[in-house]
Length: 268
Image 1 (cartoon, one colour):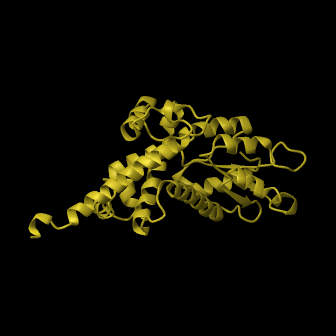
Image 2 (image 1 turned 90 degrees about the vertical axis):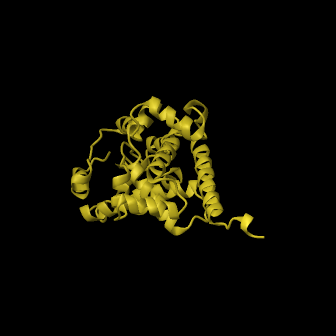
Image 3 (image 1 turned 30 degrees about the horizontal axis):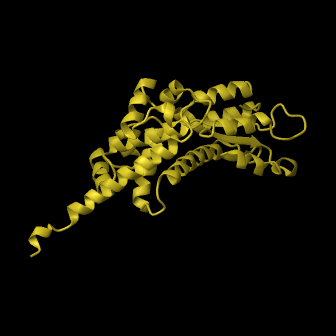
């Protein structure tokens, strides 16, 4: 949502055939779109749109508060009179800033899109994983999370790692991770749980955004993985999902360690 036609055209060139760019008319339309958007969508906004006094629109700050899982990038000419508002926007949940006139070439925007999506995935995993998670395990989880956020499956997950599905299965076993398809299912649950904590997102919208065929399918997934329906999870869904995921990872590590121990009945 930005008045600059040049920025929209640069974004279309940046995404090429890998995505789509929509131009929205105002804050109401943007809010409605973000409530429906999948986790991989990035919104570029003019934070001062509709404001005469040069301060960020209160609509942006409300949006960042109410749709916390959305990836929102502010695009404006960064100068002394605008930069002073940046800290407030970042505290509210802004993902990044594009300095219009300096950083809005297609090549720069493409790199920015990749970076903000990866940071969003990294933040989600940081909230879900212990700090002691090995770097190789985290790399597998990051690729899986990016595939899940884009609505992709096991084949795309493997392709992103430059490997076959069989190889990725072997890597997951060595890292004490679930089967790749179950891992993707877990990450979809984590993404859905994060969106479920946004107060304005209807369940039907969350289901569609996270690749579920219906809200019933999402309900079934939440009951299967978390043991609770969405109504009882709202407000703490992500913490519940992260705890359940951590328990499964711990169980897999324990099972692998047990298989690796010598049978004590032979130690006489």
